[in-house]
Length: 139
Picture 1 (cartoon, rainbow, N blue to C red):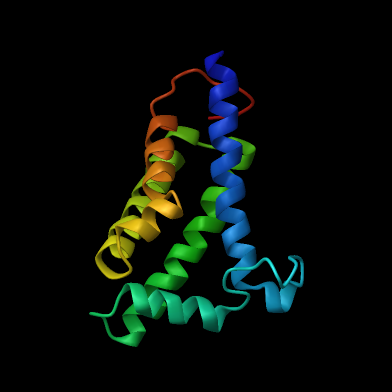
Picture 2 (tube, rainbow, N blue to C red; picture 1 turned 90 degrees about the vertical axis):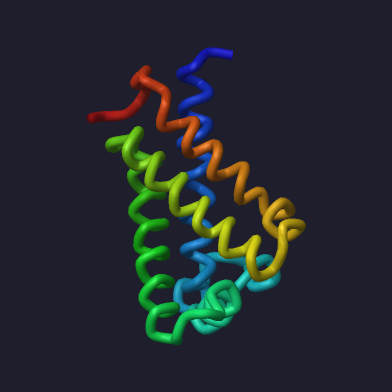
């Protein structure tokens, strides 16, 4: 398979995952997703899950990290979709996903992380950051 096709597939799949997860957190407001298919469905449920993944931190740190992660996922999702600074954004995406996977591994266990393919997504993002060929992107 041609590298350009692999690169666009990685960009679009990572972008879709980030944007879908972000929409899920605000589905009670946006109403875009089927309520029967959402994971969190609202910010409160997302925060409860975030607190479960970071039990060592006080609530204000969990809230701050959850907001930063959500902003990152939205920004990374859009940047990957449009192809802006793909290599740098992919590296940051890989780091964000790796941190998420590590926190999940420490709290809910490796089987859950593997079921959600978080390590695979992180590896895919890091792999995407190594492609030098530009395809339907700028900068």
